[in-house]
Image (cartoon, each protein chain N blue to C red):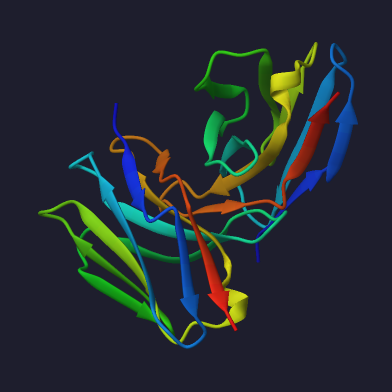
Length: 112
Length: 112
């Protein structure tokens, strides 16, 4: 079946540094790629997304890039802050359905 | 604006007891609705999704069931809980044109 691989599983950075999380998808017809932030004990929050007709999207300190040829997409967080500490999930739409395939998550720790 | 509610927030139930979790969405009509389960420290597993009243698709064979008695109400049920049913249950909704899924706050279920 289709899958999404996400790396790394854990990531520690110093406050102010950048963080990058990478995902690879298998469904070549996927056309929507959201990123979620999940804080402890809460539901995932959609923080940014990108569609297949765009190569990059930025929202303040957060950016997402998409390489359709390589089937890679990445989340970039600049000037990290302690409140960025959370688990981040990537996902890819499953073609022909309303469903997503989720990555396994990355636990980001921002050290003050 | 749209909001999604889940209750209860936490639940402790003995093995063999029934279960009913409720999810409601406000501020939108005819949403797609989803039930996910998240085991401790793990990713998101899609259990059921619904594209309309009475239309339920099951993703994983198990002793859980779902129903959609009203347009914006989604219920997750079980007749007899198993220890393995413990987890964090998340409801989500999406529109029928765009793919964005928005999650509720979740229900923490512990089966003892």
